[in-house]
Image 1: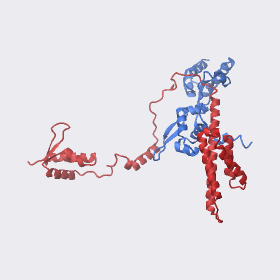
Image 2 (image 1 turned 90 degrees about the vertical axis):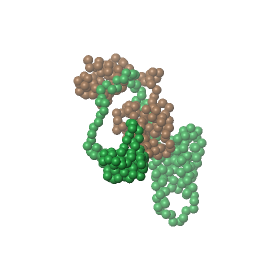
Image 3 (image 1 turned 180 degrees about the horizontal axis):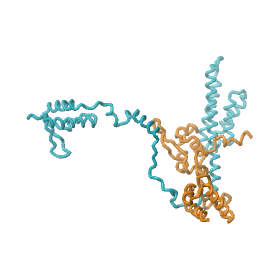
Image 4 (image 1 turned 90 degrees about the horizontal axis):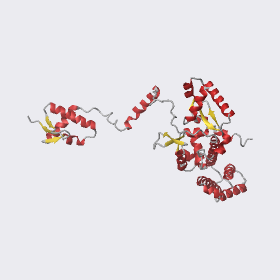
Length: 174
Length: 235
């Protein structure tokens, strides 16, 4: 009972997802117990018809609103991260995500057009960032995706990105 | 005609280019060139330039085919043509794949944004105190780095003296005395004005000290940071 109070309060005031190891140390519980506590809390919240729940995966947890009331939150929710992004910018994001770390030249080569403005837009939105330089003459900058990008795609690492084939698996063959 | 239809036509043109359906090819090419006038396509300058580039490549291929051909076709040229075609097709597929992946990712982001994390403004993201510096030493990596450094040091500024032989003090004293002999007096600053490195200047200074110690010359510096006046010792 006490543990549930602590978990819900910590998730309420923390400024981002909390890793399980933090709760395990704070409450002296193992991972399975922690997951059970999350499930119990979610059951309590659901029974009380509360509009948010504890979202958790294998590593972290956070309080989030329920998707079914999303449309009613349009006045208070933050603007979508991809708002106003063009198809070329999305294309560039996909290339950075799957080819990272990647240089501007490689992105432009794949797209066949200059990609400077798309890269700048994605960088200003915090979806991609500079991640070092390539050890060749001129030292071109390498770009990679950010934690915010992972967070928005609801994945933990870039290794969890679907393979490109998965995007096309349900289309033409069927 | 929307962009997807245009891509489909481009694709079929590239695949069927060598087939005998000349009329179909003509029709498709006409459709492509007409699509350049497509208003929505023109607004998207990146895609527009991509289509123009592909259209121009196809036009070039067609122009080549219209030229009179020699009866014996060099099969190597034919292979090159097929390779170009394959490359263009592969590039088109890759381009199309990333476009669709980008759109699919945008849909996924939109879905995930239907669940909004609670609004937070406390700076508690570093709940666990992390060490100021985390450094681990990998012996193999250290070894590789050492090899790299010693292989490349010659190109790094500041290492050029490593391969030089150590200056001979006796030679430096002789050089010094030769110069001092020629003039009645001189200064240390004048002596070192022609050296190429600080190491040579240090050797000159050591030679100066030795020559003074042995009584060959006299050296005097009246004030700190003033020039060192050198003259031959006639005593």
